[in-house]
Amino acid sequence: MSTSGIEIHPRQEAFKEGISALTGLATSVVSDVLGRTIGAVNILPVNKSSVSVCGNAVTVSVRAGDNLFIHKALQILQSGDVLVVDGGADITRALFGEIMMTVAKSKGAIGCVFDGAIRDVDAFEQHQFPCWARGVNMRGPYKDGPGSINVPVTIGGMVVNPGDIILGDCDGIIALSPSIALEAAKLGKEKEATERKTIQSIMAGEYNDAWVDILLKQKGVL
Image (cartoon, rainbow, N blue to C red; front, side, top):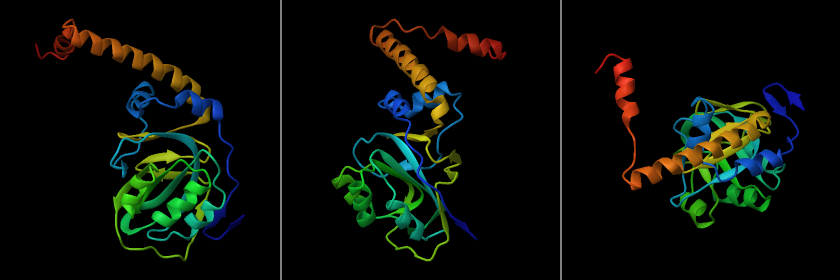
């Protein structure tokens, strides 16, 4: 369905193999192995306790301060989905709160991401529903539209396509195309193993930091 300023497209099916492979990996590690070029900026976890999520992106684009099409998107959420909303980086009105979060959770959604503001922060913690947002504001939204569902959106400078895999933790959010998910997971697990060995060497007093001076010499500093 598409009319002036409005697009509604079907939900993309989840790439379950990729989601399974990426689950549990740190966002920082996956970002590192993909060239440190992906990741949302200034989109931070709302929850006070440790949070993590890995699921299928259902995307929504709305005008600043208006959540009509987020309500429409709630109708199509399924188990394992992550609601991803491009609110234009506006934080003057909350787009999402406890009631909408409860609906999303009842549909089987496992988290949400907002380039905008949310409210009822304590409810997200109480119900252990992971949420990342640009800000918090108690002021309520408009419900006039327009908006679009399951279209490419931008979250903190990062493009998210419907059906992308959303990986989030206390450091932030990254989005991966299903086409690179398995390779990213493989590289991420290898890097995590390397980092564990590095930490073990530090604890054992065997850490070799000669690489620092080597790099400085290459830059003509030493």
